[in-house]
Image (tube, rainbow, N blue to C red; front, top):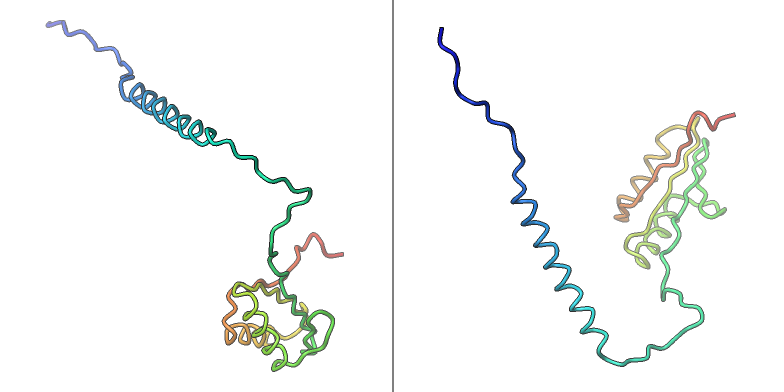
Length: 139
């Protein structure tokens, strides 16, 4: 009966690639710190302000409410589909990425919501959200 005389090789972990990566990171951070020192060599006193705000702000999203009877309200004002289309064209002209939120009555016909979506499509507004609420919020 022959006996095995080969020794079992123990598993080992090769650390060479990890050491290479650590050295590359050290070199990267050393070079990066040199750039920040070069930036500080100029003696410039920056102006100060008491209250800094952005020059322009993004417009609020337009909320379109649709009642179950098909009446359309924008900012509390009744609108027809034609008036809504004109308003949305003007909003798109003022800000190209205007956001629209469509809030339709849950018991109303879905056709009214589709009419509003068709108007948004004609005006080429792509940022549209359909409002909803979770069942847990219902009372």
